[in-house]
Image 1 (tube, rainbow, N blue to C red):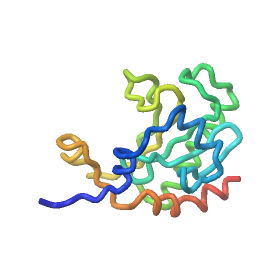
Image 2: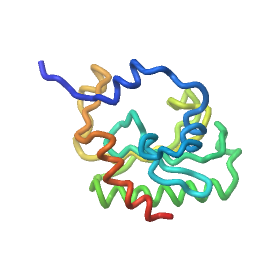
Image 3: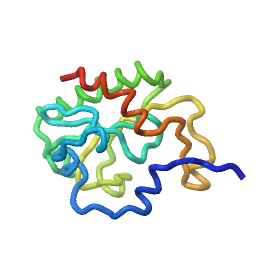
Amino acid sequence: MKQIWAPWRLEFILGEKEEGCIFCRKPEETADEKNLILHRGKHNFVMLNLYPYTNGHLMVVPYHHTSDIEALEPDEMDDNGRLVQASVKILRKHMSPEGFNIGLNLGKAAGAGIDQHVHTHIVPRWNGDTNFMPVLSDVRLLPQHIRETWSLLAADFQNLR
């Protein structure tokens, strides 16, 4: 039997679950690298997904805590769209994906893991990046550690300021 190394999962499995909204709490802290925050915009921030579908799985998150996309102001939506575009450009530069899944899961019924705070997913995709593992064993194979991905992308996101 082959072993799969996914060290960041154990932290989630064994770790104490934090209270409150992660998307409100993390930007209040200043430890951006630890919290996987790549960029802080005026109305939104960009962070890596700690439990990604693929390497480079980003989220653009408004600071405004709401589960209702209709509650976001036009400036918040504009900033979100601008950061989605910038994220795609940076991911293309560093990771050469062959496609992207970009979208929002609004509500538990739509698949939202965190349904109380709107956020946009940007998932880089490559031909052949899926296989039987997620279906049969709820395991994803990621070729790069998430901290290495943060280091790879961080400089370009810092340049957005």
